[in-house]
Each structure stands twice: as C-alpha cells, then as structure tokens.
Length: 314
Image: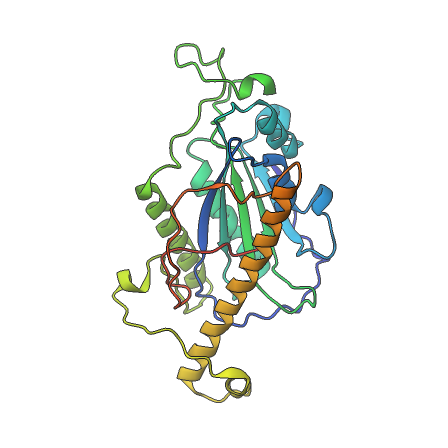
C-alpha cells in the first residue's frame, strides 16, 4: 500500500458554518466509451501533475492500496495503464465522493474515510486511490472537508500479471492466463442503498466515539417520515444574531440550512467548469459524460436529507 501522510503545511483557519451532521455521498463511473480518463481523474483528486496548483484546494492526504506489484510504488501507473489497456467498452473506474464531518479533526476524518475505502474494496482486493481535501477556499475560510475515492473493478487475486495482461478478459478455467477478473459488486440499487447506509453507520459510529451528538441519515426526509418545509432565508442580520450567541433555534437551523445550499451550489458551479474544461481538451478529468450509477433526481431543497447528493468537493 502506498500512502502519503497528512500535509501539515496546508493553511488552517477554516470554519464549519453548519454542524457535523451533513450527509453527502455520490457515486459515478468513468468509462472509456464516454471519454473518461482515469489518469486525469487520479491527477485531479491527488492534486498532481497539471492539477498541482496552490490556487486549488489541497489534497491533505492520499493513499492507494490493493495495487498489483507493478503499481505498488507508482499508483498513477495503474490508472494510466487502465486508460491504455482496458477494453473499449470497459469501465475504467468507479468513483465515490463524500463529505466528512466538520466537527472531527483531520486525523479522525482520515481514519473515517479510510474505513469506508476498505469497506468497499477489501473483500475483493480492489485497487483504489483515496484523496482527502480540506475544503478551504482561496481565503482559507470556507471549510468543506471531503474525500474522493477511485476504485478499479479489477480484483487483485494475488496472481502476478504484467500490466498488459492485467486488463485482458479473465479466464475462469485458467486464471493465470487471463486478466484480473472484474467485480460485479458496483451495480444495482440494492448495492447503492447498502453503500449509502454503511457510510452513514460508519460516520455515526465515529461521531459517537468522539462524544458528538450529531447524526447523519442516508435517507430522504420523506423516507425518514420527517415533515419539514424548506428553510426561510433570514439574511445577514439573523446570521449575525446567531454568531453573537443569541439562543434562537429556528434562526440557527434556517441559517445553517441556507449556508449548506449556498455551498452546494458553489461546488456544482466548480464541477461544471471542470467538466467543461475536460470536454474541450484531449483528456477529461471527471468528464461530464461519465455514467452516474444512480439516476439523478430532483434535489430536495431541505439539504442533507435529500435522496440524491451532489458532489461534496472540488
């Protein structure tokens, strides 16, 4: 396993404008047919190569695991090889993007993200790259910690294969002669529901272990049986009252909810610009045409309880 420790030189000072109970998790797939590029996606989430830019939100932690021997010390080689050798109609990777609780410190956020990565990959030994972004804006004030996880569906069964062989079609009769078999795990709504629920469980366990009262729920408000109307925008005056410590639960909830929506909209705009630039170039990082594993539905304006999640990070 290749791992880079947390970057302690990243500027601090980010402030969480809402509680740690905000749930976001989305899955997408990158396929060769849609023009996706695994190596570009790797560079984007790890902030390497052309994305090594101090103006971008830094990757404070990166690790890769379950890699074949030829990529253990150079995970990017794995994703570059997927671009080169994966079959024309093959899926290059599955990506998961998820928000991390703001009220946990960075080390606990890393532990939580790593736990989820291993939950999704350990059983079939699927190669992956995980990157955690602190979520600070250019002023160092916006705090939106989140993780990006790229997963290969090629199972590492321990057979030593060269990279040209790794991505060939698998042979059940003679595994050593064929490529690494592909997992069929990442398909269907049942798997999606289980993964979303499992992320909520892991998050709540971590919050409880650290004495936090916040909890997350992967279900929509409707599925939870919660009758909640969209929040009203009370404006800067109300936010100022809350900041001064005035005890007004309704105002605090409304301001937090509006802040979350503003943040989500800003993230969506950033991703749209990234996708546009990917379509205009020879390689697209997280291309707009990537197949989504779950059809996109209208977003619940109520925030963290909505059924469909936007990307949590930039």
